Image (cartoon, rainbow, N blue to C red; front, side, top):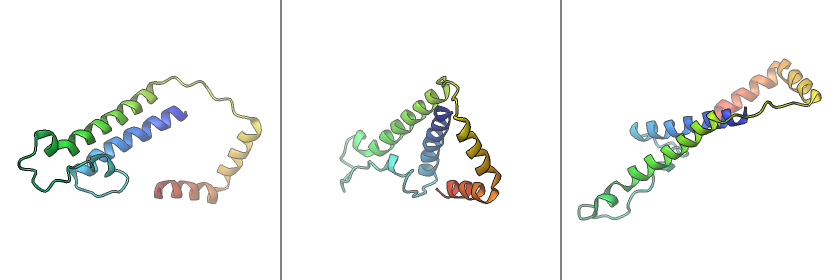
Length: 110
């Protein structure tokens, strides 16, 4: 289950980074992948690599994260055997709707 959630999260992050880059959104976490621009003022005389290094590195990083996410989705994780006391505590936590909904609201805000 953890591999599956991690895979989904990595895929969402990589796709979100590409979408945010093309939509020109300055989201702090997702903007990092494409922030490797050349700092030179005269890019007219620069090589092709210097002109496009932010795009190339950004797409390579997003592709790597996407590949790790897909591999995590494909990984066979063994069935997890929970402690019975932990299962009871989780059921009790879910039954108190206020705490459970608050957890999902906080997760959504992150």
